[in-house]
Length: 184
Image 1 (cartoon, rainbow, N blue to C red):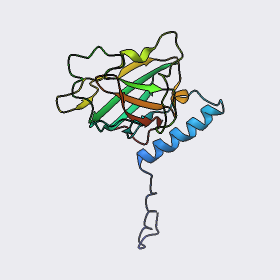
Image 2 (image 1 turned 180 degrees about the vertical axis):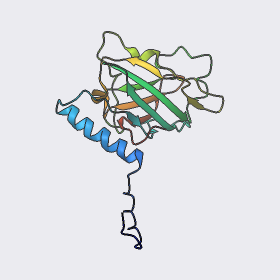
Image 3 (image 1 turned 30 degrees about the horizontal axis):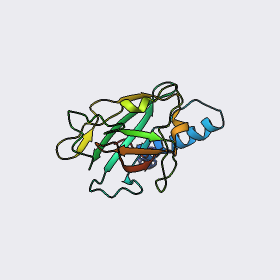
Image 4 (image 1 turned 30 degrees about the vertical axis):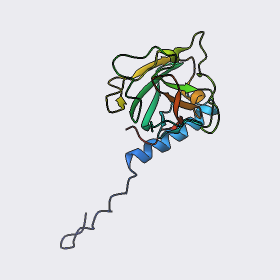
């Protein structure tokens, strides 16, 4: 309070704050480091922010968009996605081919070589049931989260490949599971 007749000192300017998205990224990174050190069981949100053509794929489909990977308890990944350029033949009637119209995490850890098989630590392959339904224009997205019981934590799937398959089961696109910068 200023003495009578003197102006009140101006308040200190407000402290600049960092954007919420930056704060969340820093928090997720710090928590992940603690998790690696055994300090917490925090589960970071992961994403595949972009896709490239799978090595050797020469077709006309070019997948774009992103997949987000959350975790529900121990060993269940929760997928949500918005993709364009997927196979329009993956419509309401799903093809019977193995891996047809699938979005799967594989054992590989780069998009320059073979991705290997599906990545899981339970007795049977949970990825065979994970399929997208495309619009006639080759787009797909989740109306609700897709839960996949893999027996793995998000830390274990971090750095692995996410493969998108066409209606024949062929591998058409590849991305790497990484820490999510933002959620959609």
